[in-house]
Image 1 (tube, rainbow, N blue to C red):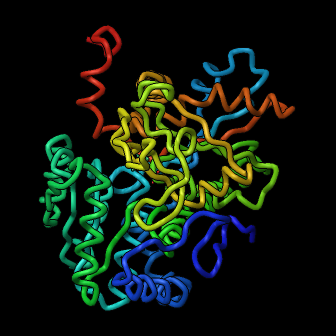
Image 2 (image 1 turned 135 degrees about the horizontal axis):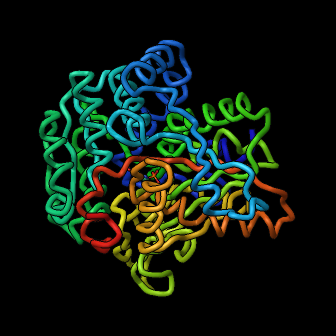
Length: 411
Ligand SMILES: *Cc1c(COP(=O)(O)O)cnc(C)c1O
């Protein structure tokens, strides 16, 4: 396996990752690391996980192909041979996040933990964790910034329906980063009974590796499905990047295939030359956030700045350390797409393919012309591309109706 897949003993991907936490959390992380090494690979864990992914989540998700979007992107038919979509939007709860939540809650159960806590920004990870906890009969508390509680009312209602307790966080900017800090504080206090279910491939070691391993089912399935359909590997794999879990999940299936180019797409917000974006790898600096060293968005004094994206799920000022390393080594390339480009992409995919995408996912689609340029610059031939459709857009309907012109959304 390549170094990007196996961190060092201390959880480093190159210079990134590690464990930058209070002394009191170290035993909890060591206990989790033991569980990650001993329980996760075991048959006793993998067998029930596979059954749940099939019967509860609905895996394997399809790999569909899209001719109408392909034709729009490449009318002349010279650059893009085929476009495939890995359909995580068809997962139970509407996105890839359930793969991770279900795996971690199963792990918590097998570790003998009796209480689950989580942080959430847009509420998507909160809903996934609340669903998994309900299915396992475990109590669930979800920390959520007070501002996000107000902005994401439908997901707050979903979590409550699923029996979870939503705890509004009033500190700091009252958004995701504060909710993560609060969840860590809870964990320190209740570590004997409590499992902290982290929502992306970020956080202190071993979370980035654990979440990656739980999401790599996306990449493993996509690789086998494409080989079955075409007999070949893709030229490129494209995914949006918030904390980085859906991207690292699909990348993991192709990391060892040097001929497959990997592209992550960050939220460019109002533009990466403004201060309103969430393009952490593209515009951030190396720093420590939520227990790991990676790229972060901060000001000249090192203070974390509030990110902006039209898609709440990409609105995170950090990014998982494995992506930082994939950027450093050049194995993956990171691009950006703006709010307006993502909006246009949602519209375009809905009308051309009959699929209403999440605004997060739309960033990956919006960057496809730049991906084609990059492949051409590398001397590529007509490309076959797999895009990870990380989630569906029902949750974004209010934003879409507000932001698209009446003439754009029919009558
Ligand atoms: C949360 C979310 C993301 C971003 O999270 P990652 O950890 O970067 O995958 C992307 N797409 C959807 C649909 C989401 O809900």
